Length: 536
Ligand code: FE
Ligand code: CA
Image (tube, rainbow, N blue to C red; front, side, top):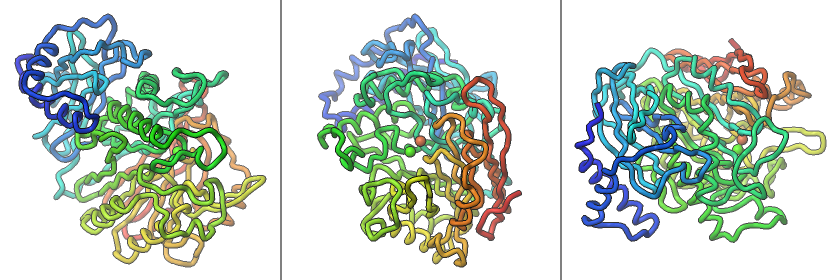
């Protein structure tokens, strides 16, 4: 059970984190006397007036022998501090091999600090591969709910199957998180979240729910971002799904600011008032820190001011290699002033990038080194070069891969030339379901298919979508790469075996009232060794 005698170890351990914080934020914290003071502070018995585990528990970034366990103390999630005083609190944790927590295999103490919003990120090592575990936390007299997590298979084995779901875009005001209620019944090994986990906009009336925080504009400060994250995570369906299995998370734009590109804000492309560029990076540091605090991420992800390396890979044995990408932090400005535009010379400029040089090099190397059957890019914006026609305009989205057309073509050509086995792209961002066959240049319909893209719709963003998409025939006639398109809400559930990939498009019929019906609208498969999706 919980062993409070291990506090000194935990403090030494946490001391390492604080030294990194010193580097990151220049705070004047270091040295042994302080550690002693911190120990005394952490040892003090805390009493909570309300449940400090209101945000639930989570786990993430597993490998074959380790996983991150997460919680954040927040007896009052409607206050930026979470209702915590500015003192350190000892949080005990334990992980067991059974649901009733009787076979505890490891336990320890961590210190929740005000500097990191009283979040706790435990990296548990020495676990067995492909194994279910259960875990919980204790602070003061309060005990958290029990979460379930799972390690990945050993790197050398070829597992029979992988079951996971991917999701994105969960605007709190525009719909309920019913999709997660269904997902929790899907018996998944893991979840991948592709971003727009929160939205930065002020609250609006007459919606399903209302954002808290500043009413006069977008969120900007660390307090604002913390509050917004806590509002979202207080949702029982969302934190309930986090407790079901480990998640790999990455962000898109709204975790910080709509359609930002590295340090460039969208307001720089129009005549709206814009932030001072330095203030914008200070704001990015706040957004990234709040994101780190809220997510089950490894310590190596800890932000350094406005920089946070979140791209990483994960191996599901030899069955699947996941490359979790960040297409926001390093990108160049959207060409042609963003929006739907022709694939002009500006869009084809070789210097346009979504990945940045370093991430691109890392990705190329990782793809070459991979020994997996399926090679998966888990990322944000649509790869397929789809020409969208609206009433008054048509073109390609400059915020998506067509805005870095040269980089996109080079990457697809690399995958084709180097014969990377079974490439699959997973995408979020656009609040619609798509299945796309990817070619080096998607406009060359008679060239070979190189990869398959599954684009998952939003959990709630956009509210209930239309059952029938207007002018779908025209869209599909003009874009040979598109095999399926739908605009309902939901997520995508995938079952992967050595021979076959299956993607089920799960939709929620009504996200405006609780308990909306869910059903599988369509399923598409890819056979190993044969790129391209088929309706199943
Ligand atoms: Fe979105
Ligand atoms: Ca987005």
